[in-house]
Length: 121
Image 1 (cartoon, helix red, strand yellow):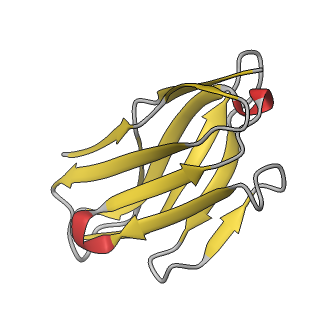
Image 2 (tube, one colour):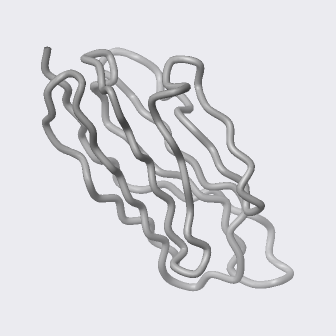
Image 3 (cartoon, helix red, strand yellow):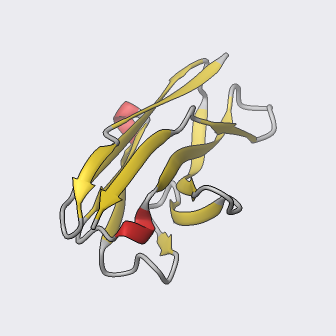
């Protein structure tokens, strides 16, 4: 079994910063892409940022220049540094990871439970 556990959400004023963390644990052989998604009330879940096992990154246009995704492969952990936060960044943030539980197994998408980020104006 694999678990993704997020931490670091909270309430912050506009212009402030937060750092989210997501640690994967359990029966893990390897982790490919890791990413962060968010879902605001009444909206669909959207990609925020993604990082490959080789540390290539991609960001949603709305967060470029403000957010930074990183990972520590030794700790099976992905981070999202969020700076200059705006009220429109308010959402539940979910981490995602493509994980193989053994060498011959296919990649499976796992999701964290979500962490609330609220940005006040």
